[in-house]
Image 1 (cartoon, rainbow, N blue to C red):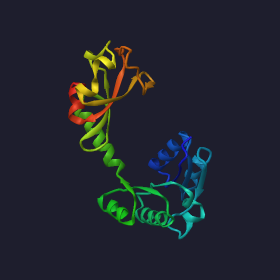
Image 2: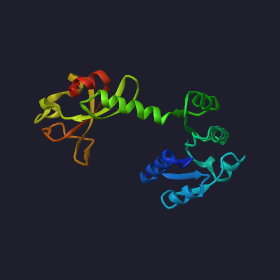
Image 3: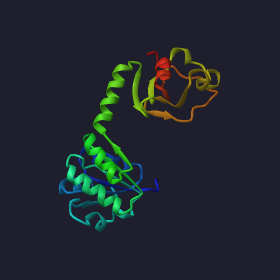
Image 4: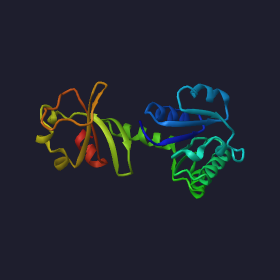
Length: 217
């Protein structure tokens, strides 16, 4: 079980997904929303679920947000509530605060308040979709920075039947193989001496240009 505890403030689609994913991973999750139906929907799936209006002074302290390690502010659609929630959480001394922003102005305000990380989910997903369209050899990609990504692609023909020891992927291709996938099974520690099967998918991290070369783009 993950030893860190989390508060997710705002249970729209984004916040609900974050809270449920953390809970499924065994984390201690405090879920907060001002809509009773959202609280009821998640109540049996997280450690604690509380109906509370974050615009009410002192409300987050009253429900114990000061006791968590990480707070996720997911109420971006209501900028006032988002900013007030971020201010309260920082004042309570939560070690790490991540906040969702709807636009650049909103993000700058959250940064000035002291949010440790500001995210733009819609923008990030747009970039990811565009990269997948441009990189036809990738089954999926996740941007780590403008220069580096993690990519999933079909095993190159030249790798089939060879071992990782023979291929020397890091030395020759300048990428790091982080896993092999067959169907729903993922091996994050593949044997360096076993031949690679023809039906597997490769997961690797590296510079975009190097990943493109290996995947055939």
